[in-house]
Image (cartoon, rainbow, N blue to C red):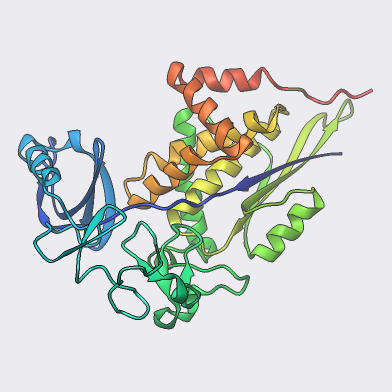
Length: 350
């Protein structure tokens, strides 16, 4: 009997901003009413029916592209994304509308010398009031505790903004939807479903960390994969059997749950092939698989999570991912998977 292990660390980053609406038309002819709230290189952020999405600008018609180019030329308030007029205030080289530049806790405007913290989702708060706020464990959005829904505070100590909470995965039926959605992408890139038994459980942070400690894994865990295997030589039923257990934190927003589950499925794929290598290779590969799922999503949160992967400073999860990403850019998924398979080291029975 053998035992393989894997874990998933996630590091949260900060992000961006907001503005006004029109009908957008793709080159394929589909139309959507949306508000442009940010432009990031060749991507644009659109608010559609209360949801924030990211799209490649090239998918839209020339009039839409021209609208974006003109939109970018206007100096805008980083809070509301409207053009700046005469009633502005300069803070750290950034100009705001005077009416926008205020603390989300006390509602008063910031004054010269005030110390404040800001997230990249338009939230700003006096440092002296920061203890009155919560910080979303997924998107790092600041929210005011007194205005929060009690459900935003999980029993295991985690906190969620209301946006991420609304998309939280708390039930097995929703988890199954996530699983099916993830496999559509994984099978497309060549990651096959496991041959062994597989169980997936939604758990709290305490249980996840408890299981992780058994294999000496620590950190900001979002998921954990444990694989047991048994090899039989000779007899009536020779061969190898696997039993995989995946633990996922309950309440992760749908897209983050997809990302974590894709990472864990990659570990299962590696485990069934007895693929062994250094942590940067193994975790970098699993994050590369995770990124393939995120790239299929158009929400702003998916972009944020991809940015987190790209900027992760961890040797295994960050540096390893960037090396794997660079390798994929020079090759294709079939070649990358073949390289990983060459690292297989099946146990030798004496």
